[in-house]
Length: 441
Ligand code: HSE
Image 1: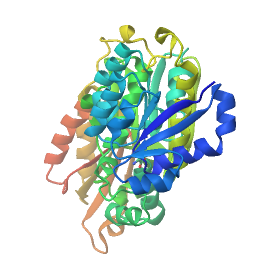
Image 2: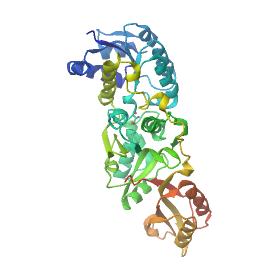
Image 3: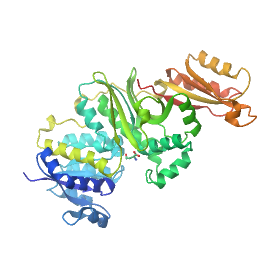
Image 4: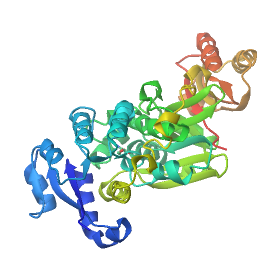
């Protein structure tokens, strides 16, 4: 049978990795897919770079629309990124009857509803394994491997840049800004790392996982997003003294009032596997009612790890593209007419979790009693308290100290209100640091 013909839009790191792995493993891939898969056309504004990556046998153009217009192309891979031209090209490829493979989490998390509806209407597939956690086959696991389960929660380290920064901050006791510069020097962090460090990239990814896990539309606009830019080295140290590590987690959970969808730094018990995922690695924990807790670990970025996911999608499409569209695995795991409108995203004030609080206080009689009394009257139960000697915190002769409190599960709104009262105490001398804590048990 004639090979499936693939057109590639954008040949940077992931595009050239995809080309190389497809070439290197072509025989085995063909034996799995049932026919050959060939990239026959590449579009990139930098045609010299594209030519250097793919050699002479592949047609190179600077116009992505020439790929979409080519009737011989069966699948278009979009590796341009962003919401701008990439959105237009993906919609045009769908309209032209092409299947699409993309690594573009930003595009799908924000415009997924429109894109999947267009694909559904046209009877083509939009596959996006590479959009979440790079080489880890988490989309496949959620959409197919765990399809028997009522998924209860997902918690993931799904941004390698921030995990690298947090690992370095903990290992070397350095502050955020210093480690960020180092990460940029080493090429881990982008020149503009805003999406990574502000939690936006992780929020795109958890938004996609949430939709697949719970059969709800992609709703990035409803995600709670907090990054790591305000995280202080001393909180990492205190957390460690209490038996926790701080990780930037993407969390989505089935809760009493709907679905939680949030990204923020979280204390995780040091004994959990997730707490021991270091450097730029990614890991996702999924809890299903039947299977229990499962863990997926691997490289979340990089040329060939991400290519591994892109090619898995190419193989899936090759196997299924002649199948009746209704028999294919739905884009978001649930059939489009069976998506739930009832499960709403829970506002953060209604989320119930536990907390780490750090209060810079005057080292005076009665301060601890006032703080704990206030928490008690709000109905917030304390799990642990840590107070260091004032000299250790503020230097010789210091009259201030840090009071660290871990709470039991509390409604976030209740804690917010109590924090306003705590902050107003004259003996609380600096803005209170509040981090969330996830036991993941
Ligand atoms: N910028 C992402 C990360 C990689 O640091 O994990 C691509 O998703």
